[in-house]
Image (cartoon, rainbow, N blue to C red; front, side, top):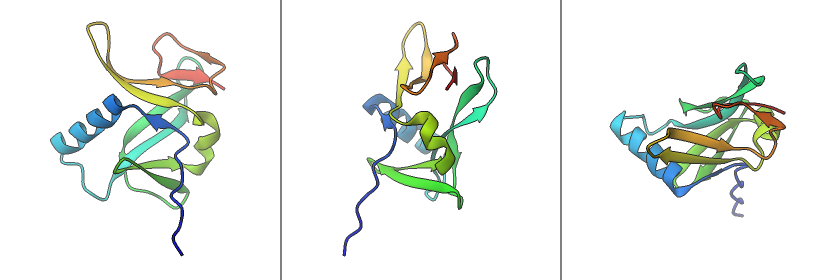
Length: 115
């Protein structure tokens, strides 16, 4: 009996996926690491986004998004459900951006929010 793949609670745009793959290759991220997405207390609006490479832990859910393991603490899903992660590479901004429908307010820097 085949198991169904879990649908990730967030999406990564093609630009974000390409940049994650680029970073993994440039920084020689080990194959058993995935992209950790989550939230943490702090930031100017109360919570800030967490984005980095890590190994899955017991409290995590792991999703496969186009060949990249997306790791998320199960408790964080309610804060990021429906969020889109994009990568901007323009004159005014360069880096990952977060569009989160769960955020009630955000700060000017775009990396902090309140829920």
